[in-house]
Image (cartoon, helix red, strand yellow):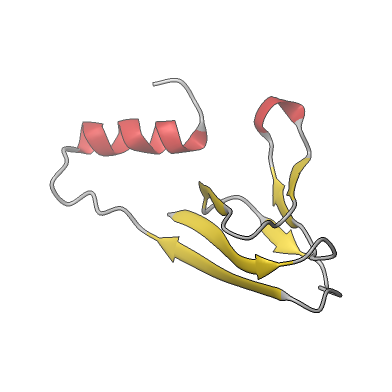
Length: 88
């Protein structure tokens, strides 16, 4: 699963997107919204936004799945490893 957020409109007081990250011992990544910014990340990572206090904040959040119907079992496992950030 792939998740993402597209920021349509926001101001400097908009709450940031926070993505937990266990890669390279970084606890989390904070992404400040900006109009036109697209953020895509693995859907299995925990992500959140704190209560928004700005007057303007419009975003589109989405999840999508990649179908593995035409792949061999080995190809599916290889792609899963890539999504988890482990060596193939």
